[in-house]
Length: 180
Image (tube, rainbow, N blue to C red):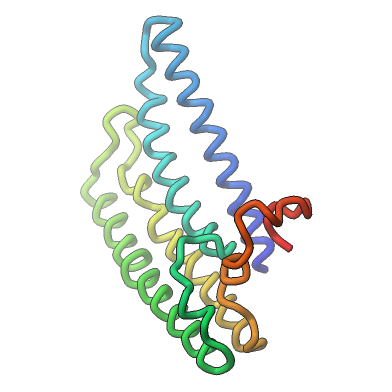
């Protein structure tokens, strides 16, 4: 299931990135070559960048590549390491549930109810905020997967901790994109 979510998020992120690149490229061409700047592409790129950042952060968390200070988790072993890992996952899940899912949904629903629309595309502004609760749900999914893995195998290092001792780029020669 995790592989399917990983692949789907990766494909969605690649598609969003491709649309942003095409949009910005067209913006530059229309402004500097044609002399008539496209207003649609600028707003589209801004909205899609919000989607890219939020979904990308959830995807990064799921890959264990997020920014983390893992000095303490790497120093602990056994039950202490497992307990700290569960505490960290609980804190992340709490933030994702309360701030991203609940708070994000409140923001989306209130913005949709207000009828606020984007100035150029005329799209309901709530859709621009929709990746907040979506990303929160994805982070909750990954927290559940990581907690299950830690429970089933107490020796499992926290997500991303295995990469901490490895210099950046040193494992890319395996052809796995940074994964052993």
